Image: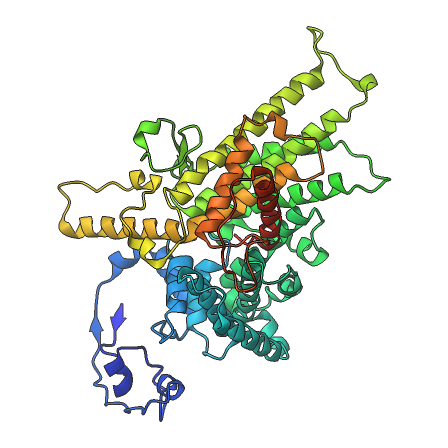
Length: 551
């Protein structure tokens, strides 16, 4: 490829070692910071050629790089005075993420953000989210600066969407999704009630996501993110998908991210959401074979699991002796995944199957006696089927329990920034990252160490959020009123173990119980002496977090 030598940035930007947009007479970076722009030195005409074929590996990889560069024609430096955004982008949008597990938001957020002006709706929305996240890591409670920046982002977005051309701009759509992210955080921390304003706004912009041909691949990922959020929201609220979203279900195309497991799971999730809503809130005139439909969808989920490549399958450790004794486990068993995102895809798969199993068990429990069927040995076929699906339910719940140690390790107390490099925090996934071949070069060993450090940091930063979402889902699943009473069929103490881990992760993230915190998110000690009262508080907190779940 051609290398044109040193950049032609202004003297000031070169001294600051930041990227310069080379605007004249003064660059935008200097103007934004009110710095005197030092001007430009004449750039000699000199072209050098460097062989970087090995960097890209193949023509296909090269084309992918070109497409990505087209998304972000002029990157803005992330080296800003406020450390919140670089911290957020690094630990939540880069570490542990790749296109094989992307949902279409975090993986593309950084490059698009870097292409925006500081006053844009996306820049302000990301800054608000980042400030709120970093303030929690610093144990500072809710950030006043983040609330003010959030208000500015709303104002900027309202101004932006006055221009209809901006409705199909990737930055506009990502700004809406980032604002939704911020409000979900506020719901989880109990500072405001849940709303669907930004989510509905994103759904309403779906028709404009296919009008920008130059950003076709980028928009396809954003469209997938909006549809995924709508599917999860519909399942949570036991409602049908919005008509606008339903008309774009065909756009969930696995080809936009080869090897990504998410699109196929979301496509099945559409059927789960429709059946879930229709079964628990049926129209009087509709008569359907609910059990047959649930079994058919469950078969699709089983096929999905069979098609997952071996490296992305969970790896189970059943011998408690191979795990560090400081890591809390269920039945001395732990499932390990290559990343938080892959693990969460598996938990989403389990959650969808649990919903179907509940429908099957509920329909079996309501069969009139005159419709019972008997097998050849005289036993009730319905009893055999009921026992079969109770066994499946138990296996699914066990698997969720086995995933908890992967996300949390031996962490306890409140998360803080030093935890990211604290050697006393032990994670089961360390076993997947060997020290490398002893004969390997020091450079190769350095790469292995860097990879291991990033893997560890991404689990510490993201893991609690991922498993908190699933644990809240499990608690609500077993305490909600609809359907048969399933708790008696669990292993003794299993629901209490789930509650305990859920409380543990909310304490890690400093999320207060409604009765134990205030609008600033301060956290107070809990009275653990009255278990029944504590269970009620935990259950109510799980319901609140389900309303704001976003991962």
